[in-house]
Length: 193
Image (cartoon, rainbow, N blue to C red; front, side, top):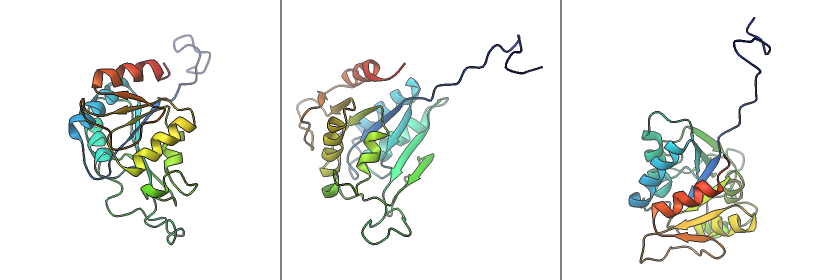
């Protein structure tokens, strides 16, 4: 029979999608000491990883997440357009996007420029709104805008930087952590079951 009422199978229940953790950070510096252990932990936790799909922190966390086998989640990326002001028709991503670890690239016509991070033309809104929880590693203007947007949209957000240093971005209204244990405890408290 193998239908919904099959006694050997039982009633079918809709499966719940995995939570999405957005990891934001520098597009040039990898901060591998922070990003790689976080990526491995997230993969083992059974979530999807979402980044902006570029180099730096985005590549480091994606590479570490992707290397975990077996894992349930995918490496997702919201990609910017090369030049949102002039390339709307093609929406081609800039050179280096997506990095080789991205399994599901989401192409957009939106900007990657950090100085436009909170403007309506920025993909940072999509990054934040698509994430159940946001983790911000050291970064610049783009990371600062993603922290600001996470606070604005009420997304749980934690800023993760090494002890004794300052994050390169503003962390107003966001929790700050200096160890992976603090970050993982925050994620365990804020991720859906």
